[in-house]
Image: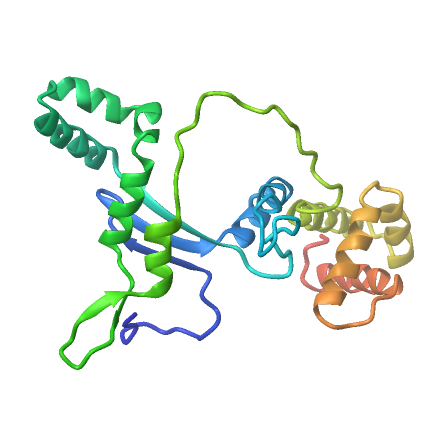
Length: 245
């Protein structure tokens, strides 16, 4: 990719988007990051864990490694064009074919062809000869030849996947903590009283797990007193910045 006109840092890319939303777009992004942001990690981790790895008794999903998602996004007008093209080839009426392609169930029967069309539209190539001959990158060829789509048969296995308590709700947790600290600072609570109220608020177990996990990823030691120090610092900042008035 030619990035000569923008600033980029190697290793920091998490989302890439090519093409126009009015035609066909290709998106490649960290699905695990998006799932955490949308609070859907429990659902997707369950789906990914069902993918077999090198052996069928071992899952290909590793929670410690990133999960990339590739998407080809087709505008409805493009799907209508496919319908008109098929109508010409099969001598069917234009309105009939366009209506079939406009519905989700009708498009499901053409997922394999749409996948191949997308891969050919945004191909990853390699130049391997002095004459400039270009070939698919091995991974792109694998996606084109080995990935197979099947049309849903309409039956569903109804199974509920419960969210793990305290996981995936970090944003709501810290918002709740920040709001509580603002109220405590406004009412003149000292750190000891504020800390006692937080322990009795019902969010402390999740808060403890969050601070413990954050310290682990930062390669730091965690002690429960770290939460008290955080509360004390946050209260002082609110007073100094005038947000407790």
